[in-house]
Structures are given as structure tokens and as C-alpha cells.
Image (cartoon, rainbow, N blue to C red; front, side, top):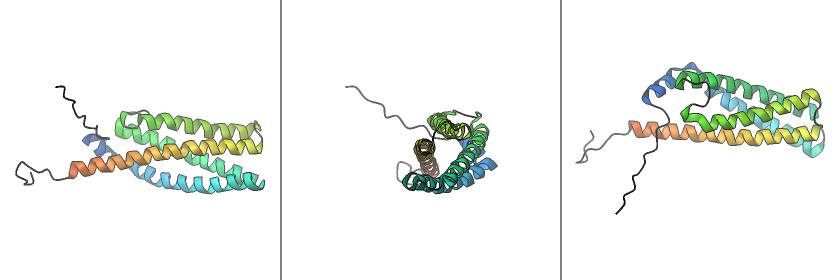
Length: 171
């Protein structure tokens, strides 16, 4: 009879990585920038959708996408520094490899918007649809990071849970 080994999922952080994460000031910076970026995203999304539905407010929508893109650049740069401090690599560390891969797509779409705006390469409606595509990738990427945060909390709870010995006593 063949037995299948149950593979225990690898913890997101080693104990040393967790220590570096907890001691890094960049952890706090990320914790502040992430919700700020989300609020900027919501305001910008409303302005872009308003423009697409009414045809008015193009300047405000454009400005909001620029602000959203600048907050994205800020969180990506500081996030890369955080990743270097915690994992020893600026990007593509084992724990955040796929989030970083998708982040590149998010950056590319936001940057394409800036290029289109600066060069008049697209009409206003097309630019707003490009913004929506960039925002859709941002939402997916933000979800990836929220799931990682949840996994990290689950890992820490499991690591801090009391261990029961064979007779039920805490060990």
C-alpha cells in the first residue's frame, strides 16, 4: 500500500526574517502607505468612473491617476527596501515572488498611463480605460498581499500556540 506524505506548508518567514521584519522601520512605512494608497485608489476610481459616465472631470480624473501612480511608486520603492532588509533581496524573495511578479504588471500599466498622458498617445476615454485596467491589476495585487498578511498572522499564531504533550499537558 502506497502512503502519501502530508506536506506541511512552509512558513512565510523564518524566525530571523520575522525578527528583521518586526525591527524594520520599513514595516511601519508599508503599513501606512498601503491604506493611503487604497484611499487614493478609491477616490481616483470614482473620478475615472465619473468621467466615463458623464464626460466631465477629465482633469480631475487624470490628476487622480497621477497621484495614484505616485503612491504606487512610493510603496513599490519602500517595499523593495523592506524586502531587502527582511529577505536580503530587493525583489522576488521566495515569500513574495508571485506578488512581486504581478506588481511589475501593475507598475507597467500605471506607467503606460503616465506615458499616454504625457504624449497624448491615447484619447481621454481610452486613457481612462487603461486606468481601469491598471486598477484591476492593483486590486488583484493588493488581494495577493492581504492573503500573505493573513498567512503570516496564521503562521505566527501557530508558532505561538502552546504545544500539548502526549498526556494533554502543555509542554
